Length: 210
Ligand SMILES: C[S@@+](CC[C@H](N)C(=O)[O-])C[C@H]1O[C@@H](n2cnc3c(N)ncnc32)[C@H](O)[C@@H]1O
Image 1 (cartoon, rainbow, N blue to C red):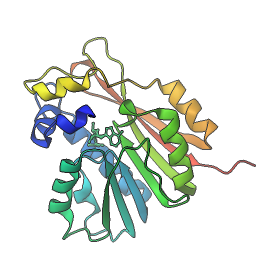
Image 2: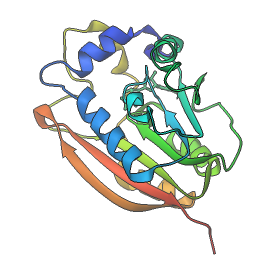
Image 3: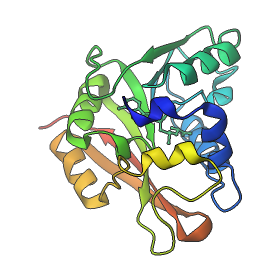
């Protein structure tokens, strides 16, 4: 069983907003900025948890919002919170490594802190196919830290289950993999977090080989 299925959303949220971690609000702001910048009509959110940040879709009248997550309980919460305000939202409970979707479907795919849990080559290959030409991929990757372990220590025991499966993604390797799949980096920056942690944020676009 994937360890994510054993982490209740209350513990995930408690951990991510605990003093010294404080990543939930940072991820929410990143998501808002992405949505503001791209004003996309069809969007896929990979590893969407329980829809943290989906409130920024309200009132935008997107054509399609698709959230994918492996944890059915997170998606149930997301559905309960947003179904009335976001009738264009669809949620799929699936493993990103095995799910298949129609090619050329999305203007934007957002993948924040999920590449750490999947086979990057498999998932980037799919992202490239699922994006429309000239569409965007936005990623958040956790950078290595000398001060903190990849999964921060908090009072939430269930989060420790992630220790054996969280694999930090090397940025150069990620960009190389993206280029091999017709995705070109257009902008990147880092955000400093508590306890020496950092996020890398990359904006990429699908280009057509010519
Ligand atoms: C750190 S959280 C993502 C945070 C979220 N994207 C945000 O911006 O707030 C990782 C999420 O990815 C999901 N996940 C992990 N492995 C997955 C997989 N193989 N397929 C689909 N979802 C996965 C987990 O269930 C969890 O909800």
